[in-house]
Picture (tube, rainbow, N blue to C red):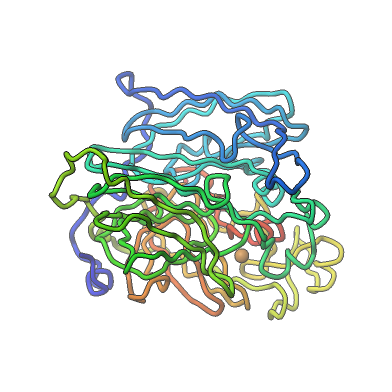
Length: 461
Ligand code: C2O
Ligand code: CU
């Protein structure tokens, strides 16, 4: 257990955060995949008209990319769209040039072109991949999929299910509402909030698991902007992993999942026949998915408790470098003026001329906007202040950071995350060791906020 005290005392215990992506070794197992982005017809509802989604391998969500700890993932990517794109491997402590950020780590992959992504995965957990060009459009049209890295501890589970959730905005014909792409209202308020929840591409899917088995559920929020909140018919839900990092298990009645975030649950089934899961962020709970308990499943089920290695203590460090990030902007905010591409403008001109609404430290960001440059090996404390009237789901590429999370009922919980959901007015500290060289994006995962200024990078030299 990591207590608040351990965190504040910077306990002398040292552990590796996650191993560095090394050069690929000849004995590493290579997992080969092929992903093709293209346009695929899809019907959301029997009452509706068929729509064209942008998908990987014609699937929604894209195919599962799976590997074992210390394997190498190799993806031959082909772009059959009519616009440029890239793929980002969200949560993976990657080699910088494989991180998939356009202009910053690679040139966008043009229509008809291909790109070879190849990187080692040195830590088990629940991750996902998604397009990283005009994310507010490309992700909302379906360009994402799950990525799971396992290790020997995963063998203890009888069932392992991905619960990848998306919040689509459909029009009255049950097609993606394209008229509202780029809506100034969405960009300056909460982002593109949808009206059609899917789990693994479906409405209220049913899965079957074995009686008395141990089931791992891997929740992923692929929504543009909606903070999903999950509840269930269980007395409580046991959280065992957060953003791909195992934690000392704890129970919550419901949990929030900001865009980009992941949470894994352990479900131990007994005499009930069905478990219902709900999405409870709106006025009324809506049905999300169901687990049917197979009463006649195999009887070999283990009695033992599951053993999971949670992350330990924050590594010992000296002389942290403090980087302050003051987030401002949006509707009803206090951003009077900000710099964009070197020119200071008032909020109204930024909105009208540049469609920008958000800033870090009074500067409107973009992919190529440097926030700081730090020395390799240095401990960084990002002091982030959400000085706006909106929540933001803040994501750092290529690193997990320690943060005293206010997201759970224990409001001092120390967690290791790559995406942290900040409430309006919240101040928090993200602590990490900058041991991975390269240019690492830091942005809001509410995709409309990132597109309108809440983005930049930290370079590790
Ligand atoms: Cu899923 Cu730049 O992020
Ligand atoms: Cu945001």
